[in-house]
Length: 317
Image 1 (cartoon, helix red, strand yellow):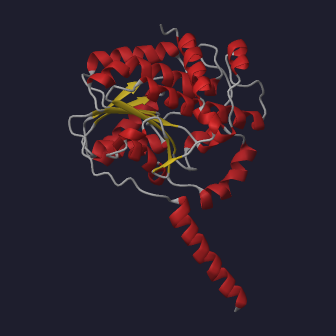
Image 2 (image 1 turned 90 degrees about the horizontal axis):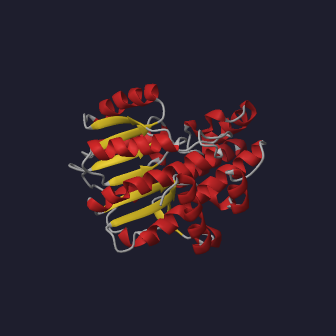
Image 3 (image 1 turned 120 degrees about the vertical axis):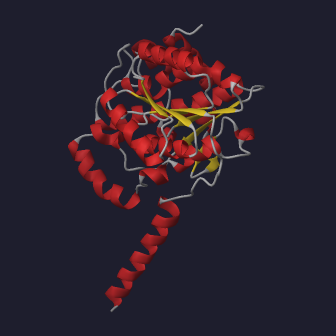
């Protein structure tokens, strides 16, 4: 009988933990987006696709900005079907290619008169180099989004009030920015082990937070606000390139401790839509709540230095 009682207690505790801690809060905004245009990068899968569906349901014209034409067009049909909206468009964007980022921005600015919300959601967790020779996680997770944001900034200002949402991660707490390594090797760290891969990913997510911090300063006096966020630990395709051994270890953890994609999209939606958070521009959110950051994630000098080196790498004036 005691064993049954212990089992029941475990089930109750697990349910409470999963319901209130893992699932987290929901975006409560009822905002409608008819006449508004939104870009969501990496929206062919995971929380990006779920975010796109929600925004399309609210009436927004949604641009699915994805690297793979085949997967992007498949997602386009799914998002249209799930949202019931035909105001969804696929546009090819490879964040690992600065040429592709520029081409996407040029095409978008010529064909779309508005941009109200930019959601920099795409991310990779794998080693390698971009087309331009940058470390893959630095190039895709930070540099591509940095260039994209800057190329679209004037349109966002014209259409204000508008917002920029940068999807980061709690992993940023484990990151650091080695500017000497960036300058000499165009990557955040040297190393190919699983441990190094996680460190580099964490570094790239710290870049997202520092980018948002500096961007908010530069947007003061405009009608554009920006936010970074941790979406939660989510069962997505981000780790599809992880080793087989890592996937085996992660499987039971995912089952019990990870959010699904709907739960994982809530903080992104909160930052994109919630009324009354404009004064929190530049801040970091988790579980639909603004959070305090460690000093390294709001370091003015590091944020400015990252901005300047990113400008140089992207060839921005």
